[in-house]
Amino acid sequence: MKRAILVAAMLFTTASAFSAPAPVSDVSGGSNDDRISKLERIIKAKQQVEFDMQRRMDALQNEVLDLRGITEQQNYQMNQMLQRQRQLYEEIANLTAKSSTPAVPTEAQADPTTVAAASSTLGETGSYEAAVNLVLKERKYDDAIPAFRDFITQYPDSSYAANANYWLGQLLYNKGDNTGAKQAFSTVVSKFADSNKRGDSLVKLGMIAEKENDFAGARALYNKVLKEYADSASARLAQQQLSALKG
Image (cartoon, rainbow, N blue to C red; front, side, top):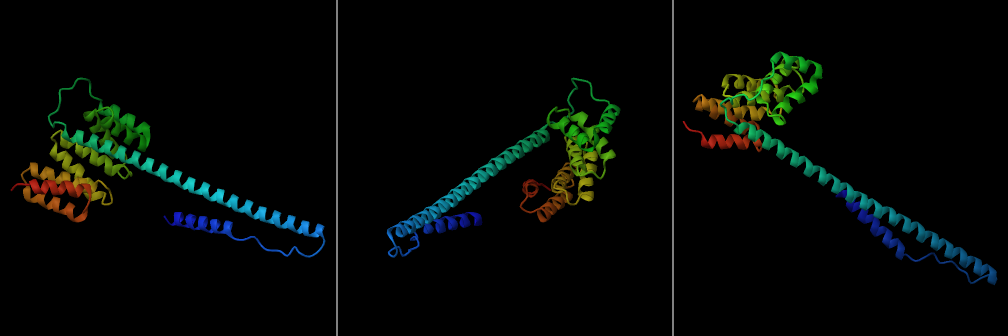
């Protein structure tokens, strides 16, 4: 906004310069040739001033167009980011809604030894992305559990470790393994205080407490989220759970 105001001020100054009168020079004295020469110099000087002003005006107009293009590009990138975020939320919501009853396998499950061997060859980032892809792209939830466990074992202090523990907790929660899920979510809460998954993990711990009929514990966890993560998506979910809480 400040830059736009500055550009407008420059345009105003330039426009004012166009209307300013040209310097007056006394051409009445001397011979006819002298007077003509003086007039020619005055005309050339005026033309040069007008040319310089026009060039500046063109440069300013180009700058305004560039700024408009940058703004449009940023708006496009923001819309793309929001669309991707919505897609991720939908994927997570679909995963959460999946039945906790294990489905009858239609294909052979991955050997945990094979998963570990593959993870060790991919490296930190590759191993994490491979585990996430098992969830989001391939829908191989049972295969993803050992993949995340292996990643956590190999890279316990990775920048992806908090997310990996959260994914593991979510997968175990959906399978009905409340004990394993509680351990994974508790790891996020206790070990990764700065993670953006900590608030979500507290909510999930509250939901597990509800399943275990520990309503007082669930209420305490939801209130903790409201206190520490106010105005967040986690807080809104905690408020919904708290409003529906019985006991």
